[in-house]
Length: 151
Image (tube, rainbow, N blue to C red; front, side, top):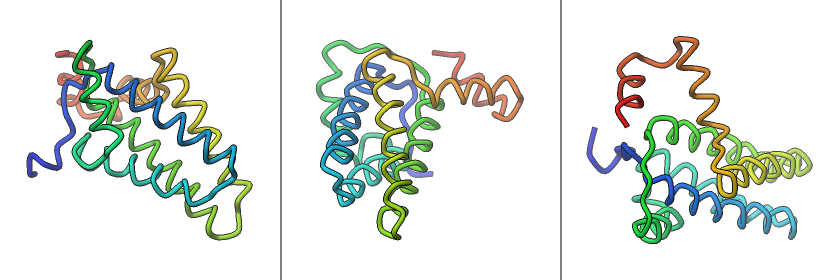
């Protein structure tokens, strides 16, 4: 796999929380203005971060630049899983919004708003907690568990 399409490990937790703040703002605007087109940059951002970390996401690139001042590091694999969950929710919302299921789209965007708010303001990553459950259940490969434990 090319280095370009590699998710960082470890991840700067400060940058992660700044990115989550951006997701909160975009999700709130999407819901408040009821503008389905705002789901496009939201979904793009999550998909870009899953594929290449911050390299393709303008929001994440800004967050990394700002987060360099006070870095705190955490394991990368759980954060990538959390971004993948966000991609799933945002892509589903996008699909629903443009196929006549706007109520479902707004509910999914609301879930993203809540989860991103927990990350941004309380440092609580729902995706990371689900990843940890997967580790305990043996669903995550041992090599990945060892990488997470090394941070």
